[in-house]
Length: 145
Image (tube, rainbow, N blue to C red; front, top):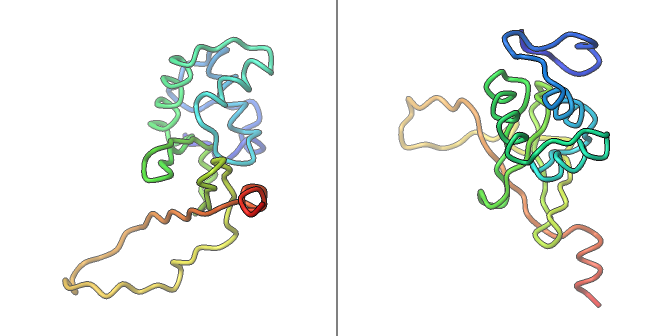
């Protein structure tokens, strides 16, 4: 069973996944996160919650959550940075500040009405990956001083 989100799951746990304190801590961080997080940030937030989870353990747990469809792994900045988020079964895109790495969620998909002109007319598009880079307001202001 793939869980839809924290509110729906309540006390349920993903089928076939052993329940441990470390896994609960990592999943709780992802459920509360408002934006994708890198593994180091997830580990830091588990510590803030009172759990001590090693970074290597966080990576192993994230791989399990991805295989179960509970979490999603995103590569941003041309694969330079990897972040993770709870799979909320929504199509999402993000803009990333190239200076401070701040991630800003986009409310729309600029590709919704895009029809690619492909040499192979029999090609069926199944998805896309869109990366938007720039400067956040804080970095843009700091850079213009």
